[in-house]
Length: 147
Image (tube, rainbow, N blue to C red; front, top):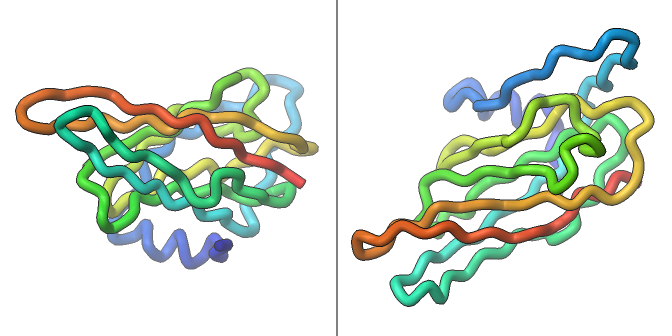
């Protein structure tokens, strides 16, 4: 599902985003302002026996040059916070500094795409589960695809 960036920005008024912008390198092309947003829903269910379910929908989010990506926890999840981290930070197509952190009412957003970005970019979704006094981490490795 794709949402206009204006709609995402309106939602952020109630819950500001926790994204830090990186300073551009000298001589580097300026990042492209986001036009559209590819939405990814993160589904998590932590279980005491570490039989935890973690999935994203879509598993590969397809966006166009200049689009943002937002990751939102599903309403049914029992996790409060999560983070998105590129597998290869040097090749990541967004100029925003990862990790991108999100929560129940706050999507994690990558919005300042580098110019001429194209290809498939693997990333990790990490959640911290706390069940019956035990805390453990769960990771998943989907992709961002820029067509």
